[in-house]
Image (cartoon, rainbow, N blue to C red; front, side, top):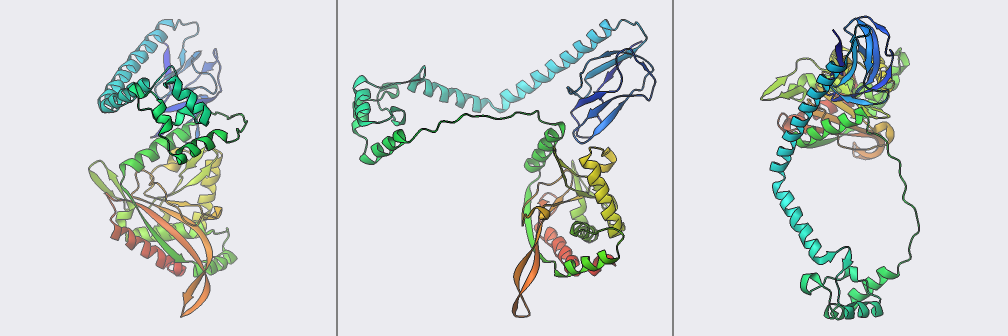
Length: 419
C-alpha cells in the first residue's frame, strides 16, 4: 500500500521546510535509507531520508517551495499503484485541520482585539464624516479665500458641520500659521521614483524573529554593564600565541573565563522550564555566529573542561559549518549560557536578547585604548565593556553583578583561568 511522505520536524524550532533539491525523481526505485531530497530548515540544510521501500509515485513540492511540518511532500508505493484516493483523503484531512486552526485563531483574535476593532471602526466613521470620496469639505467662499492667500485646505481643521471648512476658519488663522502653511506649499518638489527589491523571508530569519520576540517579551530583561581592564589579557595572549599550536583569540579567552565564572555562579547557568528551575551542572556555552541569513548559535560543550587551544579549534570549526549550513541539531542544542561578540566590528557596547532557554547572555564590545588613572597617574589602558542581559525570573541584580565581578577578576589576571 502507498505511503505518504510528510515533512518531518528536523529541529526543535522548525515549523516549515524548503525543498532545496530533489535527489530522486518520480518513477525511481526507493530503498529504505535512501536520501530523497535536501531540505533547508531554519538552521541548516539537512537530508530527507526514506523509511519505506517502493517506487516514488508522486512529488508534491517543487524545488524551492516550502511546506509546513507534517505537510505532504511525496508518495512511495508499488509501481503502477493508483494513489488518487489516498492523496485526496490526506489533502481533505489537512484542509479540515487547517480550517479548524483558522477558526480557532479567528476566535482568539476577535476576543483579544474586540475593543481595538471597535475603536478602529469609530475612527473610520469620523474620517468618513470629515471627508467623502477623498474630497475636502469646504464652502465655496472658503476655497476662494484660501486660494487667494495661498493656503492649503488640507492643513485646516474645519469647524463647520461635519468638519466643513468655512470662511471664518480661513480668516481666523494667525499670521504665523498662514506663513507655515504657505511655506509648505511653496517648497520645491523633488522628482524621484520609489524602488525596492523583495526577497522571501528565509526559514532561519523566521525562526530568529519568532524565538527572540518570544524571549524579549516573555523574559523580563535587565542589563548590567562592566568595564574591564584588558592590559594583562592583551599581553598574556601574545605570550600564549608564541607557543600555542593554534591562534588564540580574545573571544576564546573570554569564553574560557565565562566557563570558569559560571562554575562559581550556578544561577547564571540555569534555565526556567515551566514551573521548575533547572540548575545545570554542565556548562555548555553558545557562541553567536553571524551568517548571511541571520544568526546561529553553535554550542561549545563542557567548556570549563577544555583548553584554550581546544576551544579555539572547536569555535573555528563550528563557525565554518554554520556559514556552510552544515550544522547538525547536536551542534546548536543544549546551550546553558551564550556570548555574543561584536568587538571585531568596532562596536564598543551593546545589549543582546537572551537566547532561549538561558538565563543570561553576555554582549562583548571591542577593546579600546583609553586614558585611565593608575597609581595616581594618567596612563593608556586597554579597556573593554561587557553587558549582561539577565532574565529577572532567575537572576537578580546582585547575582549578575557577582558573576561579572568574577569574570573581571579572571580577565584582568588571566593566569587564573588556567589553574
